[in-house]
Amino acid sequence: MEKIFLDAREMEHPEPLQTSLFYLQTMSEAQYLYMINLRKPIPLLEIAKERGFLSFTHQDSNQIWHILLTKNSETTLEELLDV
Image (cartoon, rainbow, N blue to C red; front, side, top):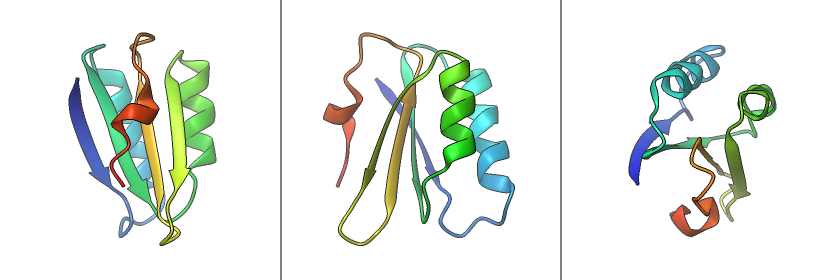
């Protein structure tokens, strides 16, 4: 799987959502989005779910959110977590 990495920690609203949605529109099933953010992006997760994406979220010990999204239903996103 090819990782598309997005560090949204210093982005201003609504740039993280806009950038993430662009990636979701252009991603193949051989790719996944790995986003890190200071907060859990609930609107993004809801949109991704509506569009048939799998998601996995994890908040690490530094209170940073790791969000993984893919179209590939064969993928176990938890295995791709990088913390």
